[in-house]
Image 1 (tube, rainbow, N blue to C red):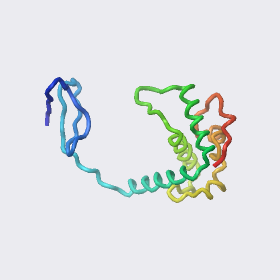
Image 2: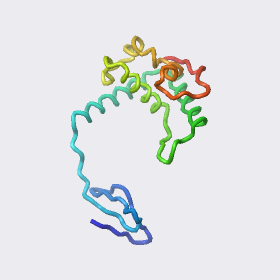
Image 3: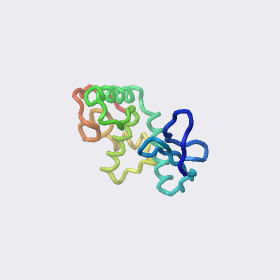
Image 4: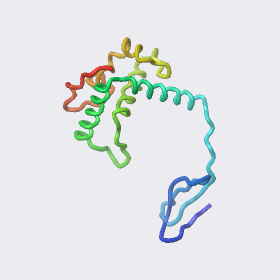
Length: 152
C-alpha cells in the first residue's frame, strides 16, 4: 500500500504498531505492509543460547580485562576511524565477541553455548589477553597493543 504523509513529511522508514514502512527511492512517499513476526528456528535458538552465554562470560571477566578491550576500541578508532557510513561504533564487548567467534571458528571442539570461564582458562590462551587476540589474528592490528596484557 502506498502511503503519503501530511505536514511536509516526505517519506518514513520504520515500524509503528503492526505496520512496517519503507521509503520509496524518490523520497516522496512510503510503502507500507503488515508486520509479520518471523518464524523462530532452531538456528535462532542456537544463536540466542550462544549470545546469552557470551554475555554471562563477559560479566565474569576482570575489570582490567574489560578495560583493555575499552582501550583497544579507543585506539582502534583513533587509528582507523569508521570505515564507511554504516560502520557501527564498536564497544569493547563487540570486539571481544568478534575475537571469541573467530577463535571458536578455528577450534571446532569449542561449543560457545556451553563454554565456561574454567574452559577458557584451560583452552583459551589464544584469547586470554587483547595482545594475544591481536597476535593470533582474531583482532585487527593497531599501533600500540603490546601493553594490553590483562587476563580473564
